Image (cartoon, rainbow, N blue to C red; front, side, top):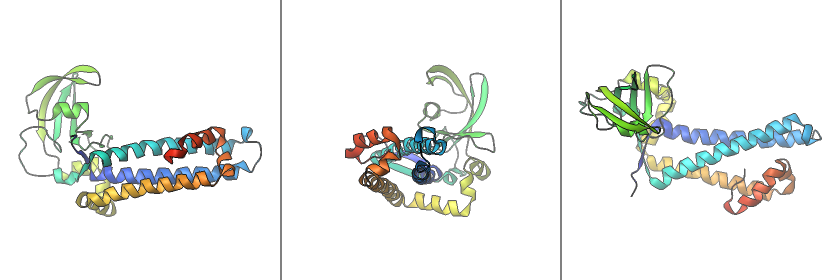
Length: 246
C-alpha cells in the first residue's frame, strides 16, 4: 500500500485556488470566442483565434490539475502547516521540515525538506524548499551533519556533503511561504490542516462542478461547439463518455 502524500497547508489551498482560477479563465475565453465569432471570417479573426488558444491552454492546465487532485484523493494525503516545523526540538538527522545546508557539485546551497508540492523559488531569503519525495529530498532524509555520500540526482551520480541540519525559524518560513503572513490566508491554511476531510470535499466539489460544466457545454449543441473550432468539436465527441470538455 502506498504511503499518503504529505502536502503543506499553503500548497494544498493553492492547488484548489489555481483550479478555480483556471476554470474561470477557461469560461471567460469561451465567452470571448462567442463574442469574437460575430465579427465574421474566423480565419482572419485575431480576437477569436486568441480566445480559442486561451481556451485550449486553460483546458490543458485544468486537466493537469485534475490529475494532481485525483492523485491526492486516491492515495490519501496528510496536510501539515509549515509553521509547525518551527520548534526547539533537537535535530538528529535531516527529515521533513528541517533546513539542510549541503555541498553538491562543488556548490553550496541551503534547502528546506518540505511537502510534496513545495518546489518554488522564494522571492526572499536563501533557503529553497524542495519536496521530501523529490530525488534530492529522498537522498537527504536520515543523513546527518558530516555525512558524505553519492546519489542519483536527475540522471547523474552526484556527491553530496551535509554541512548543517537545523530547524527553520518563523522568518524563514514566512520568506518561503508568504501566504502565512496574511491572516485571511492563514485561516484557510488552518482549516486545511485541521479539517483535511473538508479540504477533500472541496476538491471533490470542484471536480463535480467541472463535470456539470462539461454536460452543459455538450448539451448546448452545435452552435456553442462551433465557437471552439472544428478541432474542439472532434475532441468533444471523443470525450463525451468521459464528460470532459476541452
